[in-house]
Amino acid sequence: MMIYKAAFSAIRIASMAIALAPWSTASAQAFDFAGYQAVDIDALLDRPRPTGVENRPPARLKIAGTLATYGEPCDTSQIKISMAAAGIEQARIDAVPVTRCIKLRTAKGHTVSLAIQDVVAGFLPQEIPLGGPITLFVLQTFASADGPGMVVNEFKAGSFAPNDTPHAFKPPSAGDGIRGEWRRTGAAFACVVASPQKLSPSELKPDVLEKACLHIGPFMIGSDARKVTSALGAPHRVVPQPKNANSLIYFLEQSERHPYLVVTVLNETIVALQVTGPTPAKDYSFNNINLGDSTETLSQQFGPARQTNASSDKDTVVWSYRPWPFSFEVNAGRVTSIRIADPSQ
Image 1 (cartoon, helix red, strand yellow):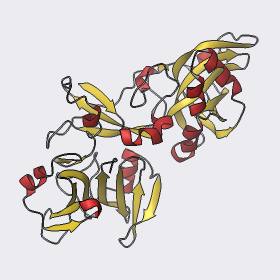
Image 2 (spheres, rainbow, N blue to C red):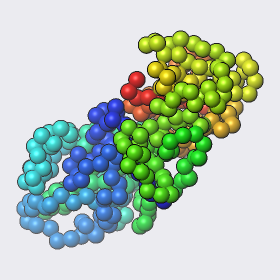
Image 3 (spheres, rainbow, N blue to C red):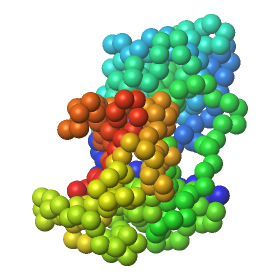
Image 4 (cartoon, helix red, strand yellow):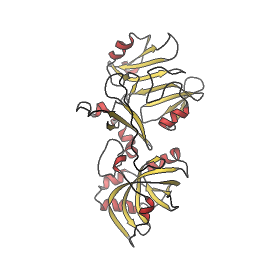
């Protein structure tokens, strides 16, 4: 099984400090969790320490413990000095603000202070309770009498197992194009494509990988709109939209009743998909979430909403995950609508 990851070009700038490790030695479109070596933080703390500050070649490490504090202002000047000494360009250092530190409590009861990217620190209170288990993906740049000097690039809830790897999944076979699913990567999401064989050069193009996770049932964002009419026939209704787009409405089970599918088309291309109704729509789930699923199931898959807003429907709330291009409507603790869209539109 081959695993491929992609991040959306339209949202890469907005999420760069979250989804990427700006100071890693290798570039990637999604956070490179596999590039971090698992180490025992207690064993690291027990190593002999220099009397002063000793700059080290940057090392990407994965450590675990329990979260003792959220981000607090601290002196991070030595981190930046050590990065510059390691040859990291000053422009790259300046591009990612690091003005805060968190504290991690180790398995042996030690407390260690770690610098953390400001944007990553901002997500911690939403994701990890104080005292909760956490895995940190850090860059060590120096050692000192006080211990190793590290900056946190990413985090995950829970402690890692010795051989933890991403869970396997079977990509759906319906529809056209390669398929992937969204996976949480700490504070961000990555689109991961699983394939039993190596993808072809045409399938590895960024604009193809970028759409791999944008599908509801058999239909995918960026596909030819004729695939919808070929499969479902003429729409029950057509609603004009801005920019000369049209929304094609299909009642999936019974005319004028839920559930229904909305396919928004612009220049003969699918640019948005939405499925709505209080009960499951067979074959029209999104990333293991279907209509009627509980908010608990939704949270397990996607985490808490990054933003909530009132819907035009009574007693309904929109769970948004911006800048990622998917959202859900929730009523009485159940998913009642799922929407995905082309982030470039």
